[in-house]
Length: 311
Length: 262
Image (cartoon, rainbow over all chains, first blue to last red; front, side, top):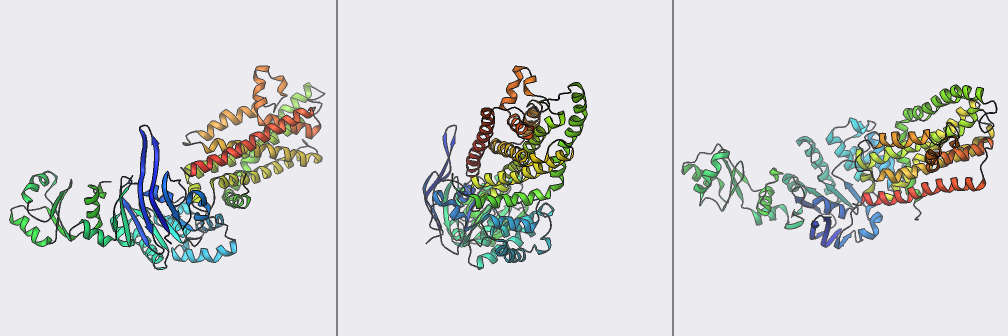
C-alpha cells in the first residue's frame, strides 16, 4: 500500500476572476521507505500540496489517501502518524528545548513516562543535549530547525513531511541538517520534502517531481531527470552583462543547446572542454568559464524556462 | 458537541506551562490593579460616601457594596488577558497553533484548551482576590463559595466571548489596546461598579444592561449581602452570561478549526 496516493489532486482558491488553481490535478504515489522530493519555485504549489498531504488543508477535488485513509474524513487519525516540519518553526520560544518536545509529545496523548526516554534519544539525535534547558529564543536558526525536526519525530511517525527544511539556514547548518535527514532515511522512515534547492533534492531524494504552476512537469530520480532533460556536461561562460547577448549568435553550432541567462551563457553538451576551446578559438575570451556536470538546476531551467536563482 | 476533553486538557497543560513562565506578571497584574482600586476607591472614596450617606448604599458600607463588583472585574480582566494573548500568539506571533494543528489535535480542541487554561487563571485570581477582600473586611467568610463561583463564571463566559472575537483577528495592530480602552475600561466604569446603575441617566444605562460585568455584579451583590434582586432578574443575568460564554466557545471552536484548515 502506498504511503501517499493522489489522483487528479486539486486545490482551487476563489479569486476575483473566478478561481485560482494552486494545485491543478496532480498524480502522486509514494511507497513506504522512499525519500521523495517536490521541487519547484516559490508559488509552484509545493506547500499547498504538502498541507493537503499533512491533512491540514481540504482538497477541492481529486483522490487522496494518506496511509490508506482519506484526510478529509480521518484527519486526526492520519496526523497521529505523521511528523511535520513546517516552513516556520512554530516553536514556543518562551519554553525550553525540552519543554517544547514534552508539550508536543503530550498533544499526541503520549504519557510523560513514554516521553522521557524518547526526548533523550531525540536530543542526542539532533545534537541539542547541551541546550536542553535553554529557552528556545536563545537558539540559532539552525538549532531551532533541528529542534523542529526532533519535535516532528516525537510520535515516531511513519511519514515525515518537511516543507523547505533548510530555507534561511547558513551552509554549515544545512549540512548538519542534511546529515540528520540522511540518517533518518537509513532508518526506513518515509520522507517527503519540498525544496527549491537543487543540491538539497540531489542529496536527499531518491525520486522527485518538478512542479510548475500547480502541475507536475517531470518525475524521476535526480540522475534520470538529468539524463532526460539535460546534457551530460554544461559550459558556463560569462562575457559581462552587455556582451553576453552580442556573443550569443556567434556561438552557433557549439554544444547541443545554448541558454542565455542575465549574467551568463549556458552551453549544454557532452564535450565541455572541447567546446570551451572552440569558443576561445572563435576569438571570444570569456571573463570566467566553467565546465561542470549537469545538475537538477539545469533540468529545472529546461522545464520551467526559469532559473531557481532568479527567485 | 463532540467529547474531546482529554485532548483539550493536553492543550491546557501546555498553556499552563507557558503561563508559569509569566507567573510574576500574572500575580502582579491580577492583584495589583484591583488592590489599587480597593484602597483608593473602596477605602478613600468610601470614607467620603459613608460620611455623606449614613445608611450606606443598598444599606451597606461602600466597601461592601463595591467588593463584589471588583471581584467580578478582576475575573473578567484576567480572562481577557489569558484568552487574547495566547490566541494572538498562536495564530500570529509564534504561530504555535500551526504546529499543534499538525498533530492529532483539532482546531476545536485547541480553542477549548486555551479557554480551560484561562479558567485556571481566573479561578486563581478570584480566590486570591476574595482573600484580599476578606482581609480588608469587604466580604464575610460565608460569601467565599458563592462569590468566587459567580465571579469565576463571569470570567469564563467573558473568556468564551473573547475566544471567538480574537480568533478572527488577522492583524494584531492595536487589538489588545483597543479592547482594553474601548471595551474593558468602559465596561468597568459604566456597569454599576462604583455606584448603582440606576443613578446613571437612562441614556447610559444600556451599557450596563449589555455588560457581563453588570450582570455578574448584580448576582454578586445579591449573594454577598442580599442586595434586592428579583428571581427573574437573577435568571436573566445567569442566562445572559451563559449565552455569551457558550455561544463564544461554540463559535470560537469553529473559527479556530476553519482558520487552521485554510
